[in-house]
Length: 251
Image 1 (cartoon, rainbow, N blue to C red):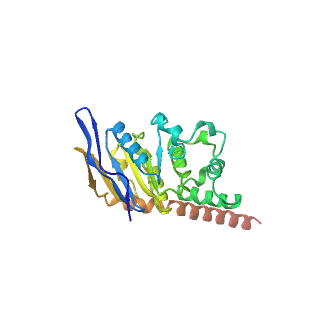
Image 2: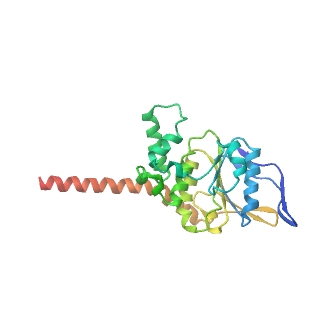
């Protein structure tokens, strides 16, 4: 099924034509990376998409961006984890964010455990928010929206100018797809457009969105990211087994 994110859109700034009669469509459940270096106009494009499509969440990683629309659309425009929640640990924060769910506390804690596993944050379950890295906070912020009934999630990652954030974005994309969401990842660093889990790359060029196929190594990387939590569990099992064996020998 096709998710039509926009009708035909033209964006200009002076004589510069950023988008010339462009529409954007995604297949249900796929992830597309949108690469373009003009961050301000690309963010305007994301704002237009969010204003046109109601079944969508736009995650913004720069607290200074789009401040004019935050208050009026607080449930659909999500900023990075607020310092106001710095006293919470990761599990407590997700309990707060998932408070809308019609479920018992035990069920919510099971959902939180599942999300921490999918997003690779298991080891941070009791870490205070203020002690998370910027990348971990961004990943947690995305995880906090992973129970929304809206089907499309746009991740504005244009604030990240360092490719070191790539593993965190890969976890986010793969986790959201595993939950059935359609994902649009907006980046201004070319390497980040090649994240694992991305099915298509759209490059904004000469007023059009040119589609590219992600490199094959992306899928090998995807397998590695998908298996990371399983590998961690196996390691913990063997460490526990070795520990219990030593204890029996000592006895």
